[in-house]
Length: 502
Image (cartoon, rainbow, N blue to C red; front, side, top):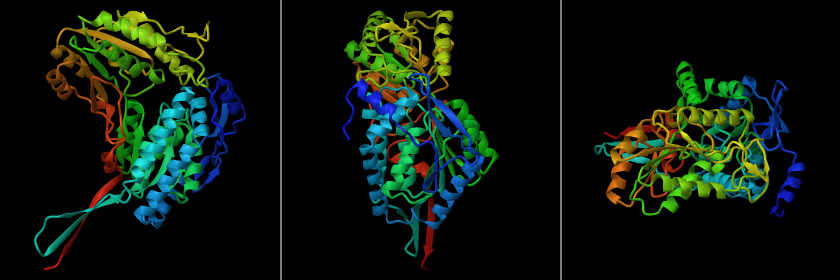
């Protein structure tokens, strides 16, 4: 199939799209047992996109039961590691072959540019699954040092049934981060996508079956968070909830785990990530570009977005001008236009929340240096779904806009005079997901990277990533890691098998 290259071609494809909307349980698509659906409104045109299965406790019970049966029977975990590897690699290849459909589904549901879903999100999902597939026949168990009459094997054992709850901002990428390590170890998975972004995950299940994932091993159950998500987190036969989303929901999941079967919980939550720019930074153009892209990409709807700029007062005004210049060069437009770089906000309610924060910022005394509340789209003022790049300068470090996660294209700045002041302000937050330091002084860079409380600290760059590096945060940004070999730890447990020959 020829990949569309123009706005008109993508529009035609979207009009002819007939997405699957049912749950995928035990290897087949099925409606919610209640027959209920919910309407997904596309943020692009505010029109109904699909009627999606509104699954609830009964459907979660069915999916978990199938997942448990498949696990206990060993249809997946007992396959030769090399066989699991080949199935997962085939699945990753099918995802790449279906990039057009998957990218279109994600763009229509969440409003991010088709260029990003096609070049970043879908390949990112495939790359995560293929990355973990390669571990299948490369993970070794251990033999502990003992006396001559004993042998102690330390074996990595799959947990069982994994409940994966993923967000709407990067639905396919984050699903891949959880599916890959869970399945390569032999677990079964019940994936609950966000209600804003169910369709691509539902389509993903079809490709899993085609690749050879046995029935019951991978299930997708769409629905509302307070119904399907709650039922999954409460289920007594789920061994782990791997969740990415808001800190408030993460707290609820931890409480539920404690009140039910003490299931494991792995949380990747919110962020308020700082970028610190010292006055000896020798490339303000590079810093400005990274700062702008770090907060305005995906309309700021990124957990580790560089939403705080902590800048030395000696270079602040120059840097602001350069950030504004980059921001003004970013094309905001229809998400199906391949040239668009910033799309729409995911929902009207979320847009309203971001606008409230912008208004709050001016009330708190910050200067609205760049106002994105009325962006110029295609030559005409438009307020539907769009918020443009916004810059609030000279904010107090104690202001709410400096403390709370806005989750929109809003950069908040605070000026400092010293390294110590920068670190104190950067660490004065409930979060700890990411940070960056811009300086030409290598000693300063290392001092600050050690002092910053964040899961990732970049030096003279931002948002560079690899599947080989772990991703996650400190404090209320959660615990546990996605990506890298370290992600495998949360989907397995260690068993010691001790044999005495004496």
